[in-house]
Length: 288
Ligand code: ATR
Image (cartoon, rainbow, N blue to C red):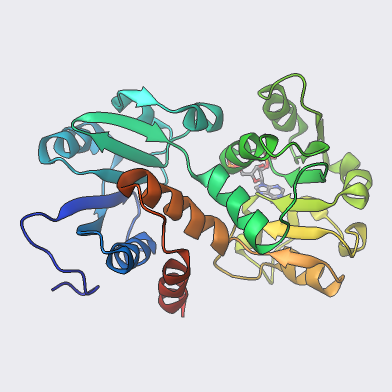
């Protein structure tokens, strides 16, 4: 029996996560709990793989029949050229975070965006259709979330970014019929005041108490009936969320995105519904 309580025998299927660094990852704790809870004979490990070893790693995945891999920083883009097929979700996001191995044929998916949206709907705002959404940031995380949000038919999505050119480029990557705008810091106040949901995808919140607020968004710009949402989960309450909460808003932290990206990966690999409550419990215990 393993540390996580999963039984291992000759039928056990192997899964894992690759990244560099990787030892901080909570994915093994979450996914091994999911296997145990759902009665899946699987085991999930963390592999520290450097970029120059990616090709060799993928050969190993094929040779050993590893069924599923999650991909994290810095490999989400680089991994794509080693795969046999790229799903539309990953094409839109421009990055892969989940690999499914079907008898040696490797397909790349991206479950970050859909994981985020499922979490937002379940935990904060069940109905996204017709909403005015502001996306703070225009990096890789924003790209995946934007494309997943578009499927929900919001009234509009406005991308606000310090470097306005990146916001424009991201807005241009979406279908022409969608109402997507791009603004820089100067436009932030006006769009935030009108927003139903403000989503921070910038890396600013990682230093919650000392550092600045994304895009210098002021708490007074957020309507009290709006939702303030964040993709960072450690810390659980970034300064952005703390200020939004004080302004009376509903807040939505990043933990649900992490859990639900894993839940979708679990579902793609096993065909079973993910035991989300148990996964959340495992991550919360690990974060304590
Ligand atoms: P990720 O893949 O995690 O989204 P990224 O591609 O490096 O990471 O994007 C980081 C995002 O955070 C960008 O939108 C970045 O703004 P710029 O495009 O102007 O660089 C934003 N960001 C990072 N630090 C910031 C800061 N101090 N103030 C405002 N925005 C910041």
